[in-house]
Length: 280
Image 1: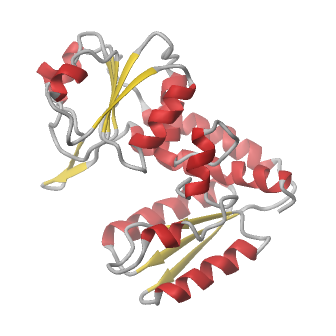
Image 2: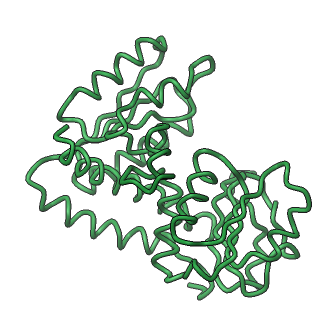
């Protein structure tokens, strides 16, 4: 393995073994439920991956799949799961079919069972540094930073992409670790002037080769969250040749992706602990 590569596969495998041990020692069985509406091919693949991992960890797993359902009926199903003491974690698989209110549906999930960390209540708790369930990709990024002993207090950190799934939560997580953080987005003028000065650059846009070699700082570190499928191959948002200038960089695939999945599984255990504290 190239010594410049941040190996998400290796770190996720290590974290999986630690999690399996913790789950094995529990006196109760935890259960993850994924709600999937429609037949989006990518979603079906992702749900199958989550099921495989959950069973390997030692969780019970239910794929609640609806070919077709009204939004109000879906809300009722989520509320039933919220009230079921045997259900530890709930995921609503995205994307939802057209016409569904993502905001309304995601925020119906109990914040104590929201293992994707996407409810407004959990995002607010994250900002306020309160114990909460952290969105899986940002959590995975922070785990990589920690695993590679990347100090943050002395770093200029630049995030490109301000999505609620990745960019915004990451901004606050990094700020909470005393990093100096700049958040860039589609309206940022002269993006290169920011990325070129970043000690740590995190890119989460979904646009192949958005960041080219001339836009990165020599000896900098890059975490590439982007996933772009082109002609059956996966690419990140950062041009592959940029690595020659860098100290460290995540590959795509094999970088952030495996960390997102293991972070979700860690959140199921975290949800159980939060529920126990609330006597849920």
